[in-house]
Amino acid sequence: MPILSRFKSTVLLLFLMFSACKGQQKEPNSTSETKIEAPAPIKVAANKTEVYLPLLKGKTVGVVANPTSVIFKEKGYTHLVDTLLSSGIDVKKVFAPEHGFRGTADAGEHVKDGMDTQTGLPIISLYGKNRKPSQEQLSELDIIVFDIQDVGVRFYTFIASLQLVMEACAENNVPILVLDRPNPNGHYVDGPTMLKEHAGYLGMNTIPLVYGMTMGEYAQMLNGEGWLENGIKADLTVIKLENYTHESEYHLPIRPSPNLPNDTSITLYPSLGLFEGTNVNAGRGTEFQFQRYGASFMDSTAYDFSYVPEPNFGSKYPKEEGKTCYGNDLSNTPRMSEVTMQWIIDAYNNTSDKSKFFLTSGFTKHAGTPLLQQQIEQGMTNEEIKATWQNDLESFKKIREKYLIYD
Image 1: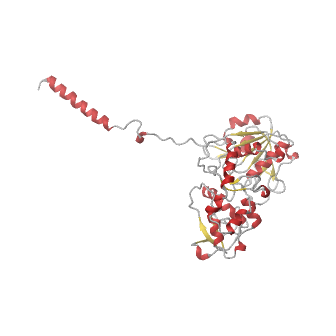
Image 2 (image 1 turned 135 degrees about the vertical axis):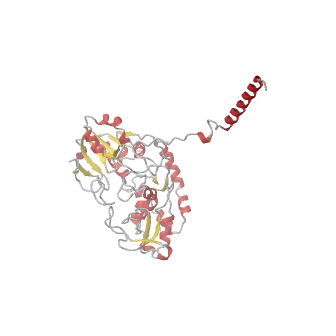
């Protein structure tokens, strides 16, 4: 074969081989080569010291804080109060909500005034006889910093503390700075709405049981809707989160209170927290708080799960202490996006002496309405009960929309 012919054949062969290989290559925009980047980590407002420290320099500062009020580091974290002091901020006193500044008090247990042994700062209780800072307590302060991790449930008392602190600040012309944190139940709105005539410390405003807002957003709503006493408005600044949306799943690295030890308890809390208004134990006195429910007076033949509550961290006197409780283990429940009545209905239906079940006053305070107890007693299903919430939920969502900071 002439040299030229051999050359042409070789070129043709190479071209065919190259074309075959190219055909096997993946398109650069194909699904198999698309890189899915992990979402940027959420940055809590407390970590944005460059934003808020200049607002505190040269001022006398009071801090509303608890064990969740921390600044995260590459390894571990430091408490906000310690960071403020080390940054030269003149912190004068700490205000402690339910469970106390260091978080050791039981739910409902009065928190005492005292002194923080780590910093020497005076601690003023906001959970006991005094739930609202007085004029005297605010008199030497130029600004209040509020930094508390919430879980987005109306009867979780930290939003009540926020409201009363905002009122006190407004009445005494003291600005308030809210350092925002994610709401682990912020991805939905559900549950019965508080009736005005039943409002109290377990729900001060006509909002649903789960309201789907961060503390910063809710603070804006308190101001905007005129819900502070006499419609006054606080001089409010909210330091925003970064990389957070209401759909974000957020793992709380520190338990927000003694009886919410993990993500499962927090996702179940909106539904199981209603057991606080009954004689049924909801896991207090075990290591699975708000991840189970049961009682000695419930039908033992209806369940294959039982447990015995005993005094422990966060629950000195649990319901049904020392008794065998029959009920359900919910510790494998995935993240929830609704409030359900199925477990309270189940417990009620399996209680032979119905007079033992409800603590009527306490249940109304938690539910925000006497209607829910009546509906359960009348034998309504979970679906039927939830249908009665919808008009109020839609009305609230329209109000809520005005104050949302995050998507």
